[in-house]
Length: 310
Image 1 (cartoon, rainbow, N blue to C red):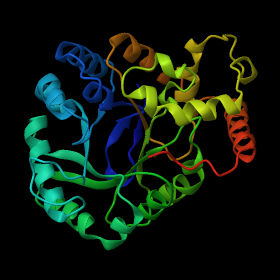
Image 2: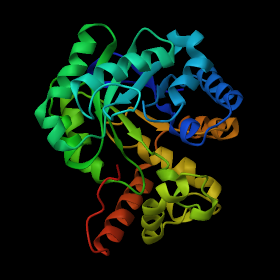
Image 3: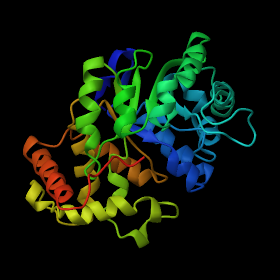
Image 4: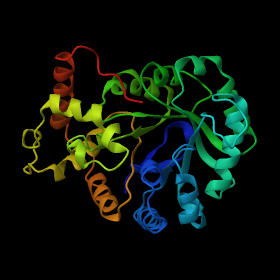
C-alpha cells in the first residue's frame, strides 16, 4: 500500500484509511468489525478514523485491534456534548472529558490526532476549544490537533498554526474544498484526510442505501444525477455501477494535498475492493479533468453553489 507523509506531522499514512462511522451507526456485529479491521491492517492500511459520536465505534475499534496499536495511526473527533459527560458543546471542559473517554474506549494511552468535529467558524475564531486540544497535546494524550469540516470553516482552520491535520470532504460530488481548502493546506504543510471519497455511493438508488444512509446520501445522489457522468467517457470499459467506487476513490487520491482517503465499510469484500482500487493509484489527468468539468457544469445549471456537505 502506498504511503504519503501526513504533512508536517512526520507520520507516514497509507493512501487508503478506514472511516469508522458505518460500523457504529449501522450497529455492525463485533465479529464483522474484527474481520474488516484486521484485514485492513494486514494489507497495510494504517489509518483508522473514528469519532466520539459514531455510536459504539470507539469501543468496537478498541476491542478489535487494541493489541495491534503500534500498527496504526488513530484519529478521533470531539466537541459535541454527551449526556454522560460534563461540559457544554464546544467548551474546553467537553473537549477534555471526551478525550479521556475516547482513550478508555479505544484502549490506548494516546491518540495520534484529535479533530474538532465540524464546529462552526465562530467557534474556531473564539479559540477555547483549540486551546483545550493543545493542553491535551502537551499532556501527551494526543500527538496532533486538527479540524474536521468544510467550506469557510476548514479554510480558516488551514490558517491556524496550532493545527496540523485537516479532514474535509473531497469527492466526485463534493469539490468545493479542492479549491478553498487544499491549496491552503498545501501551503501550510498540513496533513489532509479526505472524507466521503466515494461520495456515499451516490450512484446507488436511495432505496438501496442501508439504514441511516438512505437519507444521508440524498443530496449527493441528486448531484450525481445532474452531473450525468458515464464510466466509458472517463476511459473505463465497464458501464456497471461496480466501477464507480474505484473511479471515485482514485479521483480523490489524484487531488494535490490529499494524503489519505478514508472509507468506511462493514464488509471484508468491500474492504478488499477498496484496497485493490487504492493500489491502482490516482485517476489519470484526463478523467480527473472530465469529472471536474461535469461538476462545474452541473453546479452552474442549478440555482446555487454546491457547498461542502458537513
